[in-house]
Image (cartoon, rainbow, N blue to C red; front, side):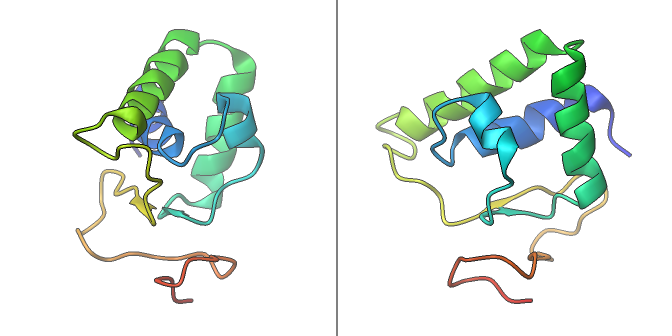
Length: 108
């Protein structure tokens, strides 16, 4: 299992690219475009945010993701169709989609 800091920085950076206005708004409902984040990891992320121990890490990761979303030489304001988190043991390209995924590229 990745360390808490790793989960926060990797997942929250990707989450910020999906266009929510605030981190707390983004954490309130897991977006279907966020793939390979298991329920236990998602719940741990929310618990870590609530506990407040990693405020700086959450803020920095959110700022990095928003910068990526807004940069003209990156996403240029376009939301990605999918953000895939690989964790520490995922093989690239082996994407697990949640059954509720709304994206046209998703499969159950």
